[in-house]
Amino acid sequence: MHSIDAVLLPDVFSRELVKLGHILRNPLEPTVRNFIPSDEALKDAALEKSEEHPTEPFHATVALDRKGSFSVNFTRFLGVGASGEHSDFLEIEAEKLTEQSFVNADAALAKICRGNTALEEWIKPFAVHRKPVYFVIGIQTLHKAKFRRAIGKGSAVEAYAKIPVDASAQMPVNVRAQLTRGGTGTSEGTVSGVFGLKVLKGTWSIFKATELPSWEGKPYWTWVYERKGGADVEKLTGLGLHEMDQSDLEELQKERWSNEEEDAEDDDTEDDDA
Image (cartoon, rainbow, N blue to C red; front, side, top):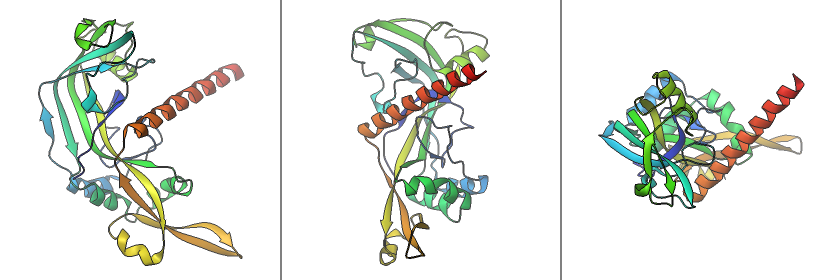
């Protein structure tokens, strides 16, 4: 079993949209252009998952970034003060936080990949361009969470004033939507959903047929990469799983912000055309 840190997501996502076994382009955007295995493949992989482990009650203080999203970090660092003279935080009090993971992530990934032509088509561009993918091996879910704002100067969370959430407060988009659906814009509303993900980074290796025994039980594909002398050149390409570190997380955050800026520019262009 992989014992790794869970990544705090920038928002709380519906558990129906983010599940164990999903393969992501960027774990900080878990519902954008990801690969969702078939129900049959997920059911097969589910044989590798653990029981849910609850922490009840659950309490944490989460820093907000410049756009009002949760400041992405590993969840074990929650409550660590932010640098700078002024920061906004949300204090979270939940009925419980549950965590469920694959006991054997490698076996689960192999079951999802085996004979999966839809996955082969989706994942090939990543392999050809050596871009990583991310495999969801664990999910942390908030249940009936309440929020309060914590505002002040300095980096010591304990020194901040704690006040109810109101409609004008900065907060993640999905959190705001759930509070609104609850009929209130204050801490009296509750939020439930996926709060953190345990993911393994999938990277690519080209190997020779003689090395195939070392990839037994691991996902690999045979793809045509180029043509030489009028003949197709096939290569064996394997997908290996690795743990992420802080630098990986920082690069993913930069990519997420870049994608958001590009989407905003596209929206502006469409408005101008209209």
